[in-house]
Image 1 (cartoon, rainbow, N blue to C red):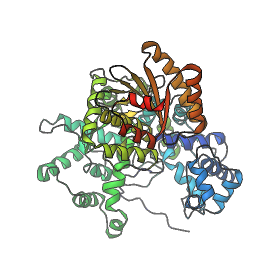
Image 2: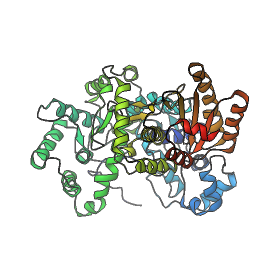
Image 3: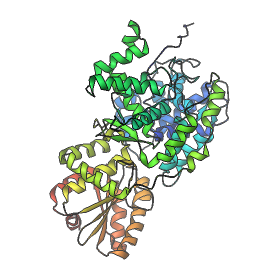
Image 4: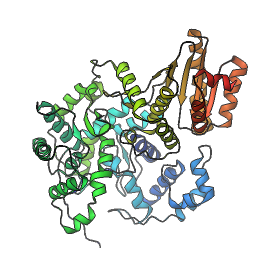
Length: 525
């Protein structure tokens, strides 16, 4: 038998498999049919099949097989049972987790470990699978006709305000609540009149990731000393050495704790998780994180009620604590101090000046190709919301006399946090004569585009035409399904509705060539 590794100080590291809440919800959906059933290898095998069928996980074998790769990237194609069997048999997982057999059983545990740490599910071999109330809330939020982004933020806040680095599912001698440590350090910096209240720099977050305890004052004083001695001119090498000191790393641990992980990947994932709560904003072009002051009432409540917390050694007791919903958090409203529409517009036009047209076109292609952005701001905006933001910027850049008014929700910096809510066009545009309404999506399947996009666009456009008969809509997607084009054309014939459809490359080429947005309509007719 292999020896059990003793607990040691380790940098906080969230699973990149579960990068966004929608990924967690997707994986939980695959557990749903087996809730309360006893977890066995047979059940794990069924769940794995569901995960693969839902295209939530891909293997190298799929990417090397033309037939399987084609299905994976085509929203209208689905894997057969024979395909799934072939994928599993040809994709041995060289992986071992404690309590699970080597291979796919251990891969299952890797997938679901973070949702269990966050209190969304509980499982053990030969024990019933549990999905908590918060797990069901997360699933339901994504299964609603229009994704309930506000509820998702509250579910993630409910989990992360309780989350502990040394929870019973991990072996880490560092003992703190990452979100509360962050909030209390930010609070101390804000109360310090010698600080400019910009928040914590990206590089300083590595210190929090490696900090030993929940002593926010200790972190604050440590960072104050760094700033006094070095300003903000920290190199990654310098921060890495400080982090190794905090971890008490020996020679073997130095080889295991890589600089690009402590100063790069772990920081990015930390920011993503903290921002998923809705109470953290990016500042200084992504160089700092700070309170989202729209949520100052929620922040105050969390600090006052969760800075002190119980420590658990029992997995079930910790799970029960994590999965309990604090309904008061759900009820706290945003601050009304901000003119959000004005903040949103100012930020949109600022970034239209900051980025070049070529950069925006490049990022549009990236997000539509499911490629990761390396931009210090854009990489922290989830893909559907990023598409709305980038499209809005491109319209501002290309059409100087066009008033571009996106409907995505923003933080106190005016940066997008989630997509436009149902019942509104993603982006509303106005010039001296025409009103144009842009709907953008990453969905490429026939049913998704026709039922979820074109049908609502028709409804919105008919309503808009009552206010201004010179109105039209534009639909943009990575790939436009032929049935989508046909339905849009049918609405033109039957009801004289102008719904223009462009794939992302066509859209870019069109707006490059036009001087005004109405020329899109002229060339389409």
